[in-house]
Image (cartoon, rainbow, N blue to C red):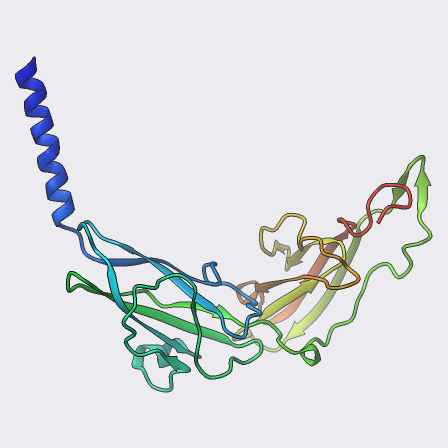
Length: 250
């Protein structure tokens, strides 16, 4: 029995040694503002993060290079980059700030990172992307729709009665759009639909705020949901935390 245990332990040690000596270097989980391909980033200097994966031991990043472009083609060719950090001798891989040309409101950007390590290895991430939000108040062209007067509510005992509002609009497109982004802001909660398909998987979004000071918004890329011809957008607008179901409650 002792011989069998010793042989088993030796086999495990050999397997461990084999695993630790091999494995190509990879860059995994590249994020912008700690999110994967986010839409509607409001920061003027978004922050990049990434992780290293390898089967080797004692591997440490020694340098990185971040490249950003306004199209995937420009990023691949390296022509007309919005930002090229160049090779930066650093082990930082969390929340590296963008330091390129000013980013444009509503623009979509593509990026990748290249990493060098103390073992002489080099790896480049897959191309990722993010989009900027509407950065200036003048970019917001929409108007509020919903219930204009929330003071005259029916009462049922100690609870208010205010069913969800259902909003619907048809619109025509001459062709399939190249890119379409939906910004949704509400002082309650909402669920949106495009041509019968639910948009996103948020629950009770957006999150509550101190509504007199600020109101959050949600951003969705709805390009795949649109088509040439007649399209229909719908929203179920609920009370959320803005108008609670308690008597005189806000």
